[in-house]
Image 1 (spheres, rainbow, N blue to C red):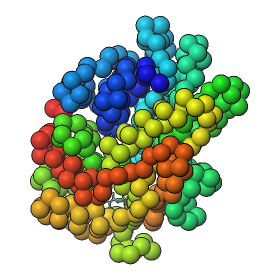
Image 2: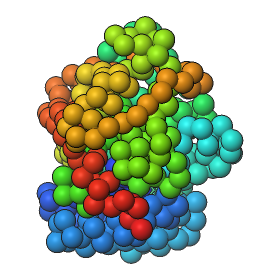
Image 3: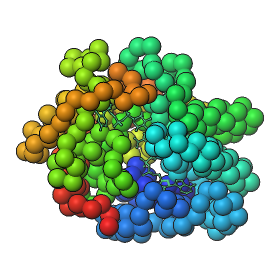
Image 4: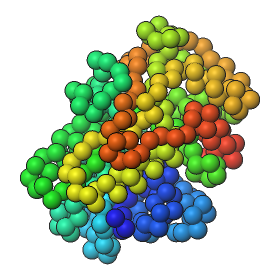
Length: 337
Ligand code: NAD
Ligand code: UFG
């Protein structure tokens, strides 16, 4: 797998994955409409790697523009990150989420068929497990969705299964990410939320730098060791490396397979706050608030399938996730602007 199309490659996880791909001497072509990212991320990728990836500012919903990319380039595989990802927003504008995520994927797969590209890595999410009946979560657990965003991931997984059933020449990796956090150790690329962050670690980081006053801890009455929600936080660089392993696996013709990408360890909200404070020598004021609707108590992966079959495991500890987040925040107080 040498020539790779990366959709959404200017985004948070995409940019880190492109860096790892370029480090592996892969030829990368990025397609992104920059709806939730900045072109500056691409310049930073070049600064880190010394290589400028080919970039097309194209929307997956623009079939003819996407078709010209497929005519102009040759691909062995596609890594498909492009999508809208905000759970709350998806409940406000569900049709945009279905249109963008589902139709965007259909357009992409149609062109892949036309150009005989049948290797695909798809960004799925632990959200497809809904509220799991137990933890750690295995790939074989039942899937469900509790919001439109999650439903797009579930639908796309099913569409890709149908596609594989229709033609076994496809090789598809469904990567179910747990909670990606952190940033590249250079501090040059990282997560750059547009608005007030919805997710815990970007929020904490903005409290630490003084942009936000204090963290609201959503719920302290969960059945967990300190009452706050538990998640499987994974360093974005470890996650990025998982995509390289998934691509390598596709060359063995594995068919369609799902993999959990997590560390297998759960940390509570207060564990994250105290580690961030300790590692970065900052204070994070917080107060306990009510539970956030739709949140579950505990979510962490059984990541042994990825270890066994992809030869991948997360290596970086929570301390690095916190230190790297903070370095990115300090070096880029206003993100890429
Ligand atoms: P992101 O928003 O930073 O990156 C997504 C990129 O896709 C952005 O650059 C955006 O501009 C682009 N994009 C969106 N719609 C597009 C379209 N129609 N055409 C072209 N480009 C388009 O998000 P991320 O955190 O890097 O997430 C990447 C993928 O991983 C998403 O599919 C997301 O749902 C999934 N995921 C993310 C998380 C997380 O916590 N970050 C967890 C599980 C799964
Ligand atoms: N939390 C707070 N205060 C905040 C933000 C979050 O206490 O201001 C808590 C949440 O209640 C939860 C934990 O921090 O217990 C993590 O919340 P995040 O919003 O960071 O992450 P989620 O686990 O809710 O969701 C994330 C992604 C989803 C994805 C899911 C599973 O945002 O898109 O992981 O992969 F589906």
